[in-house]
Structure formats: C-alpha cells, structure tokens
Amino acid sequence: MTNYFRSNVEAMASYVPGEQPPRGTQVIKLNSNENPYPPSPAALAALQNIDGEWLRRYPEPFGGEFRQAASQVLGVPSDWIIVGNGSDEVLSMVIRACAEPGHKVVYPMPTYVLYRTLTEMQAADILEIAYKKDNVLPLAELIAANGAVTFIASPNSPSGHVVPSDDLRKLASELSGVLVIDEAYVDFAEESALDLVQEYENVILIRTLSKGYSLAGLRLGFGVANPKLLDGLFKVKDSYNIDAIACAVATAAITDQAYKNACVAKVKASRTQLTSDLKELGFRVGNSHGNFLLTQPPERNAEYLYQKLKEQKILIRYFKQPGLEDKLRITVGTDEQNQILVRALSDLLGMRN
Ligand SMILES: *Cc1c(COP(=O)(O)O)cnc(C)c1O
Image (cartoon, rainbow, N blue to C red; front, side, top):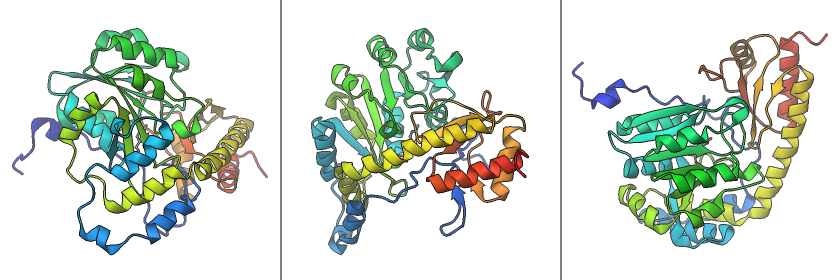
C-alpha cells in the first residue's frame, strides 16, 4: 500500500489499552483500575435529567459548569482549570502545545505507557530514565535532561508509589520546561502536589473522574495550572471537547465528595486486605497508594498466571516490558471479587486441597 502517513506515525506502535470486554460479559474485571462501585447517585440523577435541548445545542466550549464545581472542591480559581475528554486528552494537549521535533519529552520508567505514544505522535524526542531501586526518582538525571515536557505520575502506575513532594518541588524549580504531575490516582493517596501549581507556573496537575469517581466511561478529566500555562493548551484543544452530558454528570459527581470518599475508603480497606492475602500466598506486594497492586508471584511466571486467570474470566494486567515481566498489576475490586481472585490464584499455585 502507498504510505500515506507521516514517518513518525508509520514507525510508531499503537497504544494497547487494557482489554475491554463487551458490556454484559461475565468477567471479574481487575485490569483497568476502574472503581468497583457505581457512580454517585447524584451523578446518575443528573444523567436522568439531561434535556434534549442540551443535546440539540453545542455545549459550552470550556466545561464552565464543571470548572466552577471543581474550583469549589479544590480551592483554586476556575480559570486555573482546563477540562478534557478524559485526562488523556489533557496530556495530549500538553504535548501538542509544548513539544515539537527536536524537543525532548522526559519521564521515569516504568510508568504510564501513553506518554510514549503521545510523544511519538508528535515526533518529539523521547528520553526514558529508569527509576532507581525501591522507586527512587532519578532526580539528577531528570533535571539534567531538562525536557520541554517532563511527566511524573504520582501515585505512579504500575508501581503505586507516591513521588516525594521535595523531589517534585526540586523538579519544578530546576526544569525550564513544563512539569506534568499526573494525579490520576490521587483520590486513593494521602497527599497531593496541588500546592506546587500555585508556586510554579510551569507545573500542571492532571486529575480524572475515571478512577476515584467511578466514571471511566464518561471520559472526563482536567488539568490545574497557572492560567498563563493554560492559555497555550486552550489553543490546541478541540472546540467542543466536553459534551453536554459529560459536563453535567461530572459536575454532580465532583460535588458529591462524601460519596466519593466513602467509596475510596472501602477500596483502601480492600487494598490492605488483598495485600495481606497475596502475601500469605507468597506474593511480593509493593506498598500502593493507588487502587491497584503491583505484585510478583512466588514461583510460576506471571504471564502464566495472567493467562490462566483469563481462562477463568478473571482479567488482570500483565505488561511484557523490561522490569515488569515477572509482575502482575491487579486492580483492587470489591472484597468479594478479591476473594474470588485470591482463591483462583491459590488453586493455580497448588496451595489448596
Ligand atoms: C487511567 C490513567 C489516566 C487516564 O485517565 P482518563 O481520565 O480515563 O483518560 C491518566 N494517567 C494515568 C497514570 C492513568 O492510570
């Protein structure tokens, strides 16, 4: 076939999302870090109240209603907030606005695979720097690289660790480019880097309603940054990136903090229980501040267990990637789901009957 594509697009691999089985498939789905609990009743009520007239008209282009609500919750002015079709879109806006061929995009590894995909699309240069032992940030190397964009996920995926705020502050002050702090899992952690946004104009914090708020299917995420930084991002965003339904439902969801906090508390309790159950089976389990665990099985290889669980309709995540081949990432489900998983693993390891 004639090659129609830009050379960087021709050369790049597609992003491989976690498996998303068709609706109604009977599976225990612990592979995409979705929240096991339903969205807030207030969000579902907002969905019921969508008026056809809202759909006839174009939506408000900046998700203004959601920005107001998020501004209340976070205690930052609403013009410090940019709304995206999932936080993935906000990440994409940062790359499109700030990185170009010849510029470096830098991040520690392993981390969220989409950073690589977005950078390849943009034909900017990629510099991946390995985390040091025990998830220590390669701070000096990241500073020396001085990327046009530097991505840090905190809590990180798949490791679940939080990057110390002193390290983030040091990065923010030393880098001349943009520091993206991806807080997709912050709802399950004890700390946030929100303060840094107010101190450093080159920092953008990325949040999502997909994980903490049980709204992965809605596609709504947002960034928090100094309006000077957001100015550039607004230039590259799609004109009507936030649909009227997503805006109304997300506004209700973020306003209902009590419900989100209650779900998060349940997930955190289950995370503790699942950690100890897996350790009992001989798994090594890292300390996680997300709604997932990165774990190393005792004997059989990780890929084998992943495949066997899949045959039993239990989906978890396996990354065939340096440093991760011997590990599994397991989303924390309900206690009931976690128990089924633990029983299946125990059987596969021949530890029962
Ligand atoms: C899930 C995830 C996202 C994307 O979330 P969406 O808002 O659903 O696009 C971003 N960053 C990390 C690290 C994630 O794990």
